Amino acid sequence: MGVFCRSGSFHRKFVGKSTLHDSSLLVTVRNTNYIAVSTASGLRQFHVEFLSRALGGKVFGVETTTPAGPVGQDARFNEYVIPELDVLYRVAYSITRNKTDSEDLVQDTLLRAYRAIDRFDGRYPRAWLLTIMRNAQVNRVRRKRPELMHDPDETMSRMADESAEAADAETQLMDQEFEAPIESALAALPKKFRKVVELVDLNELSYQEAADALGIPVGTVMSRLHRARRNIRQHLEASPLEET
Amino acid sequence: MATKYTNCKEVALRLQTYLDGELDDARMEEIRSHLDACIDCGFEADAFREIKNDLGSLAQPVDSDALARLRDFSARIAAEAAEAN
Image (tube, rainbow over all chains, first blue to last red):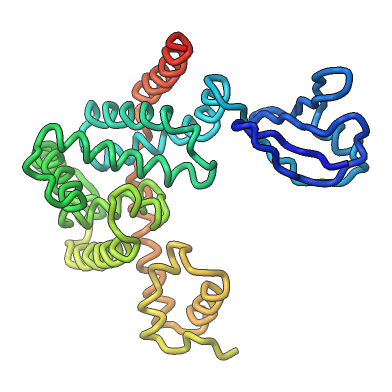
């Protein structure tokens, strides 16, 4: 008898062979070790390890999926989105350079992600969320500065640059005397280079994730990043040695 | 062992991608072997590795209050969706 996994959209997927006599349908739920099995005597829950033993010890690829509707939506949101809150906030701050704007941008991203979570295939949640964040940011700019929307990619970096400008000027002035050479080297970078360094080196995004966040090709991320690090190196080499 | 990247110029082109761990396993190993054997390239790698580490140390911890507010916001999204249904 085949064992089937029923997904949120009630689509049946074959996942393996079994000798489970009274079940032909598995309803699985994410974030749990228990699997609800539709049996002749009604819906029963089994621990996944017990079920595996019952199936003759075979490890078969039970695909855990979530039913559609509000409950499934919440479960998927908790599974895919909540663990990325920290990264989302860091990236938002890199983009906006402002705490209030960062929170607003993450909130906007969360709302959009919640509405779209049923259509998300579960792969690369961070990349998915960063793309949502970029679109949210472009829309925010469009509302504030519609004349800038001829080239969304260009607008993205221009908007980030402008929103960072005021904060940067003040911070740079105050920190100049106290910051470590690496900080002043980073601050001296042109903004579009600095942003990539912040995403990859400070926030530990992959090239692809940084590309998703900024809406630029991976190759551009690489070239900006590598050039930025060379500039940083030159800056450090030109810096006077610290007194000990 | 001779490697594909015995040419220092080729290694220099891929050095930072290597330091970011963004090459496939085979290429990572080829460059690692070259860096072990070539003093000049090894020095370059150390310099950029140090820069990368120093940059990483600049990362600020996320404001825990902001994170808490965002968690609350997430919970409210779900609650409001449930009410609407």
